[in-house]
Structures are given as structure tokens and as C-alpha cells.
Image (cartoon, rainbow, N blue to C red; front, side, top):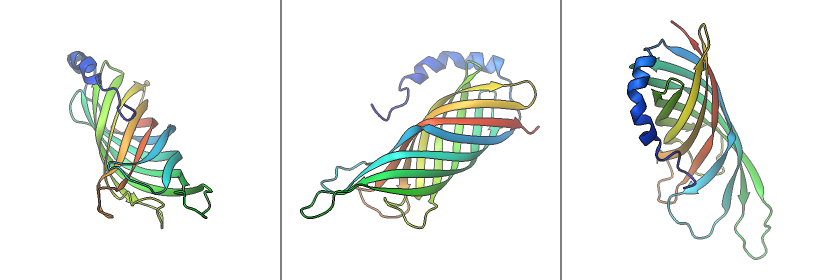
Length: 204
């Protein structure tokens, strides 16, 4: 349950699609900036691992450039470019005669996201899609996260008079579902949860 986002949201949203189509005319392309924070990051493996060090998330932030393109009256395509900075705590495995002092490590990722936004009830949207990650640090304290990940979230948006709109988007991400190096069932994955805040400017 820890990593699920609003599991029954589609049951609530479906009756609203026709309403969104009546009240949300197809808009113009938008560009803007976003920041993601106020969340947590974990290092997980989908396979059971016996022994070894423990890796605990200790905070992160993401800065992004966003591009939003309307496909229909209720569906938008979102892309952009993001830079993420992570901090983790490493707890070494206990072994006789070895120090158990925790260590901290930092690393960065560059991401290219491609998501869909499904708009409903005028001010709300569902978002989900995939992103391409590339390690942006010379050394990684965990397995390389270069690969393809996935994200899912729900959000609130508001458009001011003129060309400016803002949004807040609670989300979760899992990285390197498809990874480009270190093959093996015990591959480590970053798992983020947090809030994305953004401001967009209509360009047409």
C-alpha cells in the first residue's frame, strides 16, 4: 500500500469526462518551470536480498522545464527536461571488527519525461507516463539509474486571466524499470513520492 497512489481514482473520474469536455476547450501550448519537493525517496529492489548494506532515502529535489501541448479538449501531452539531486544514507552490513558508521552520499539524474494529462472537473487532472533517466554523477552509490522509469499522479490547476497558469501535482515515480546496465534481478531502483509545483505560460 505504501507505493500506491489513489487506487480507485478512475472510478471517481469517469463520470466527469463529459463535463470536462464541455467546460475545458482545447487550449494553447504552454511552457514553464517546475520544482518537486516535500516528499521522500527510497532505494528498493524487486527481488529479496539477503544481507548487504541498507540504503535509506534522505531527501531530494527536482527542477524542471515543462512543455504542455493539448491533444484534445480533455487530454494534454506533457514533456520537458528535469534535473534531480538525491541524498541517501548508507548503513553498512554488520560484520565482526568492522565499523557500523552510517555514510551519506549524493548523486544526480537528468530526466526526459513524456506524460499524458487527463483533465476532469475543470480544475483537476490525472497524469501518468514514462521518463528516460541518465546518471549525471561521475560515480553512483547505488546501481545505475540510467534507463526508463514510470510516474503516476493527480493534480490541481488554475488559470489566471491572461497567459499564466499554476499547478500542484502529488506524484510517485519508480526509476530504471528498464535499465541499461548492471543486469540482474537484484537491481536497485529509486522510488520517489512528493509534490510538483509549476507555473506555465501560454505561448499562442
